[in-house]
Length: 299
Image 1 (cartoon, rainbow, N blue to C red):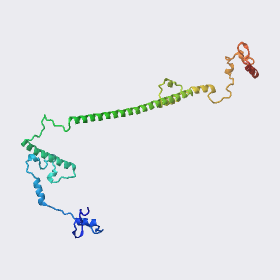
Image 2 (image 1 turned 90 degrees about the horizontal axis):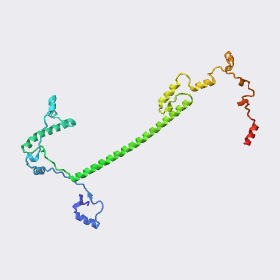
Image 3 (image 1 turned 30 degrees about the horizontal axis):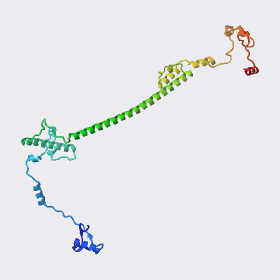
Image 4 (image 1 turned 180 degrees about the vertical axis):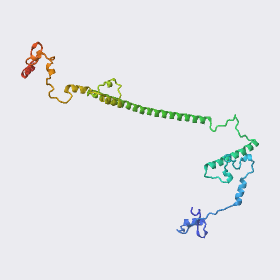
């Protein structure tokens, strides 16, 4: 294979001779050298012209439908007083807007020149009103496409519905958690209000109605109750029982008014001997410890 693809040998030995020598074992390493052939470039001008003449056909314009023309006049530049780029002989290829406008005006000039030629040769340029183009695909193929589109739409609707159900479940769980937290908050606020009422910090029973304000409103209500003028019920009871502070000694001493006041004097209680008596004037005497044990053992 190497010999067939550009291998040169000394003394210009043929390929068949080399194959025979290789079969007999006469070839040794280093005898054959691989040499790259330089590529020969040919510029056959006459041949190229002949090929161009064969390809060229002198057909009428109706068969060719080709036009070569310059773009139309730039009306906007003319109105604004600017010199068009084509008049200057410069079209900036990097300016996208200028380049596209040049293409647009060139196509516009081609249309203006081609329409009269088409009308001249009797070629219609507008589609008739009763023209129906043949479909590229058959009705059976379009029916399959329609069924596939419908099935795809139904699958999308199912997925959307499942997504909405998942979102509703999540929202339902969230609402349930919020309701539970709200109930716990209301219960905590009620227990706090009950404790405050038991301690005498407030005298309102609004929390028993079930529609008391929770959170900030309840705390504001308790603060307002604390800020009211005068002591609360608990403070009044303590003051009544233990006094208002200050000097305690000599509180039970008689005064002139208390000495002269005998409205609370009872003769029976004052002259009774041996303690209090029950009904019938008998003395209520508790039995001793030994007697109580005997009574307990008898029972």
